[in-house]
Image (cartoon, rainbow, N blue to C red; front, side, top):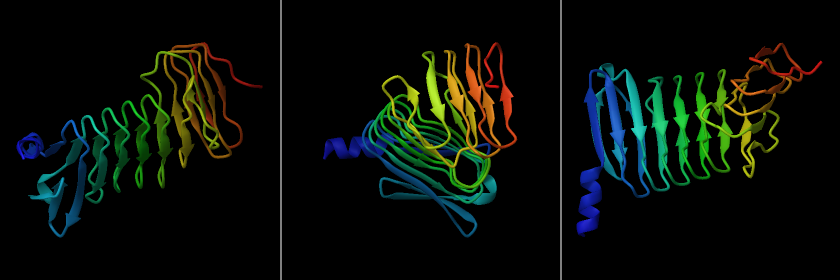
Length: 213
């Protein structure tokens, strides 16, 4: 009983200057937002809190550790979703979202809008959805191999699967970034990268990178 009460106290949601900040616990949390009439409704492990939608300009949800289930269903309000350590499911809304899985085998869904998805370490599934979406490996030190055609990739030992994503940002290593038949933007970063746009009208941004003929 004491542990249950302690977890309830650690959960928090606070609205300050347009920023609705929601925090989970070190355990598995279920956190989602919903737009109901003129209100943003926040559900935190079964608890419900309401805020005036007109007062909310950005939503940040940090699940912290544990296997978290996080969904932003608050219409087009942009969000930043952070899974933290654990095997998390994170889903954005209708706006432009930034979604970070953290360590663990995560599932990230951008949904509508132009979203930025960063699975973090682990075997992750990144699904963009409608909009112009980007998979980011900018925080990686070791080389990554990333493919937009659904082939598994990531850092050595990982098997990330990317679908519905148009763009890739590489990390600090010597990366291989491969596009698909759509119009892609591939950004290499500081390493000696190989960028292969495949079909489409692609934009390849390089430092000292190799571009296939």
